[in-house]
Length: 408
Image (tube, rainbow, N blue to C red):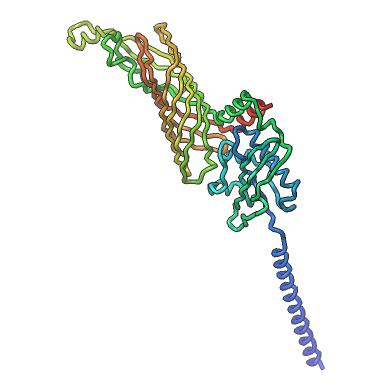
């Protein structure tokens, strides 16, 4: 009897386990099927970052992008689940990726670093570049090009490929006075960095003119101030391309303006040239007397620079050539003053490394060549050469601030 009860209980347990197993398997298959069906039937939602349309000023670019975004929603051109990242929200990130209204932001030419940043920052699936045409009266025609950031996402969106007509746009952005347009354009060229340079040496090739037979003084030596701590000798504002817009190993170039305020303080020993020449010819003659000579130099130079950069994971190496006017002022301990304007060319080789998104360090060796000679009785110079270690700050919002105030 006991054996019979045990067998019945065992059979019951096995049957119960079998039934539960079958039910569990069916439930799992059902869940998987439901998930598969849900994935197939779910809409293909996109999150799109709008690249700044190329324009002469930032305000017009922002207005075109905002108008296009509002028109898409108003005309129900995109799906409800599609999300457009507002220009105001993406602008800060785009500025650090070198994407602005000053360049034609063709989505096909985005670097891997730019794509990855947009995916990480905004969880974006696509970017769109815009080209616009203004027509009278108050008509705007915008052509959009969509590009997928994720290689597995679809980049075809026929509804966006059609030119979009926008009516009743503000004429103020497209009919600006010459003065306003010029001010807005110039604000686009404003620098996006500022740096302080430290140096205690001006490696000038010569203080006196070796080719002038009437030169009154001859340079004996230059006091090397290397034992002195470096001083702040320059303040520089530049326009540069940010490191974040390039791949780890990359190359790029730019044509942008820069301005530099420079202060140099150097000491020399001079001698009367006649007495020096006599002593050199005949050591029995009275020895010349050394004169301590100190000169201070202040200059402001602005130039349009062509810069080539080689980007590495450890920083960038760059070469720059620029041309522009230089305003200079010299004074010495002999109560001589010299001031004027000279056309100068700037040759620079340097290294730049970003500490974070804002701060960077930079080392440059710079030649400033004067097209007309700067000279007086004691002093002669056609070139200033100096090495400077700088610490700089990247602040692209400065342009936006000025543009907003200029445009009102």
